[in-house]
Length: 430
Image (cartoon, rainbow, N blue to C red; front, side, top):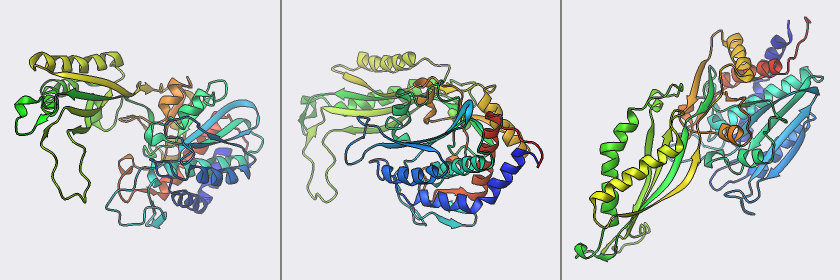
């Protein structure tokens, strides 16, 4: 039996331990926003990984968006060095989104039922975090004298952009090519798919301006909401058809995301919304301001400056047709598209592991939304990075979110085999 077979069998034998770890992580409600219990989950992981002689650092992202003394942004990096060689890094985010409605199971109990573990974050991505830890622990126990280095990170705030997590760490050199060679992010992309990257994103706020007036005499005011309505009409008639006609060669899933897209994230105009327990009426005024947040996802074939210019040209066209039309356009957030080459070492290693474990070649996909690969690529300048992990992406952020136990085991085996390959671990027959 070769080393890879021994490692795979060892990971399979730890299924119960994998389930227990995933459940324990789910039971720590790391809700973001606001960013709860980050320190607690990092301390749990530190205690566990220190037992495998991994050097653990707790790093607070002081000054990052959202960081405060009430909700500090804590991150964990655990590292074990062998003899000289490459470093393989497994990165998982620890935050989860709000629970929402319509759950039929408790969201923070890690209920195990019919081969599934239920809970907020089970799929996205505490199941992947648990699988990577079991894979690394099994590898270290079987091969304590390996060449190279192994790292595991548990990072904050991916759900809100990753600025208190991977971005903060990348800015400080933790993902630089002279420290790390290969990165696997166990996001829930299915056990038979390798995610090479993601589309780009531009968030912006548009504000149309008017003049306040009495609601009974709207002709004496200037309604900012009507101005915004004209903007939306122009989007419907000109922009949305143009975006849907653009296609990418990136293997984005699902199929609809292979086109450029724009989502209207929110609109607010006029007076602030009244409290639910308020029994009166709003005042009769013409709104002098209307704000809209747009979420524009763009393709690797598109240039971000062109994306912004296209939208500003739309606003200018509206202004040419509407007297008194005024607007402000403010950037909120932007991320360039990224896609790792299929010939990259980490892609080849995970491909071989999937083929060996599942008997099939994996699908190569690109995510419609962004994840922390953006910071590893753009800030860390490390392009040898992919997402691979257990779980079904469509279940993320849904009620009754779950991850399959079998999927976690298979993904842990794949990650363990890829780790052994990337560190060039070879052992003879036993």
